[in-house]
Image 1: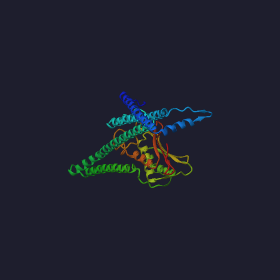
Image 2: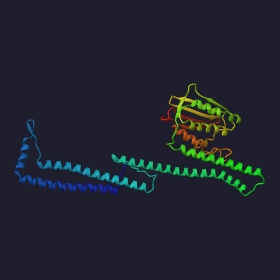
Image 3: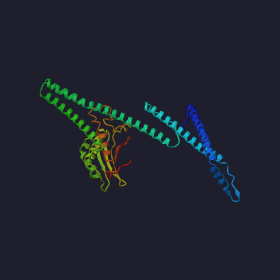
Length: 382
């Protein structure tokens, strides 16, 4: 929408033009009278004008030159037009600026969805675009801050829930022992064993929480070294072979013939792969196979896939599986799930390596697909 003046502003601008015109006419008349008096009091000036007039000719003909008065009036008229235009343009810009400031105050009063709706010509339009862009970035920053605060609240809530449950059991069973509410030594051993298991659950949560907060920091140091990613996957597959047999799931590893060397932190990557294979064994109900594969991507990056043919992840959960404390199963039972931080930690570790991770799931396969650069200082574009 183009900028438009209000009726009052148009009248104000017209009044400004008329007043300027009247003042300039009065000034011109005063100058004309002064110059005319100087010429009359100095005959030499009049003679000079006459000589100039008589000396001007074009070819064989004399140029008919106006009286000096008409020349003076023409020059002053041109100057007056320039001055009036400058004054009106300046006044018009001031009105535009006043409207922009009014709109800016309206936004500052809390109307953050509002933007300066009109457009103008020249440099002022850049100011309007900059203001609207600044408001957009400010709103985005506020929304990000609210989202972070909400995320912190959810983090505290989830941690409190997951710690309170085993802690309640520990206090309960130790309380039975403290109050001598047991019949024999076997009861004492039973209560202490349950308290021990619950304590290990709490330690697991605290360890995962510590690891999550550590890898979420962008300045977390990585112990980078040249790593044969194919050999590493083979080692991961072999370490889970016995557990896979217990779950009646076969682990297959597919790697290229040539060695694929990448620059990475082997300890942290091993945590990612271990977590993904563990999840495949734990949640791949009805599945018979777990597939690990790696392939070269144009000598710039590697594509790593850990997949299983078990029960698929519901579509509504695909966009949330990497959220901290999120579990696909609705309950927060320790019998069916861990802390809910494993995939969030995996994502953070992959991002620390300047890579990407995503999940795809259908009736045939659930696949976690990772891309990692061959060199740590190269970013992978998905």
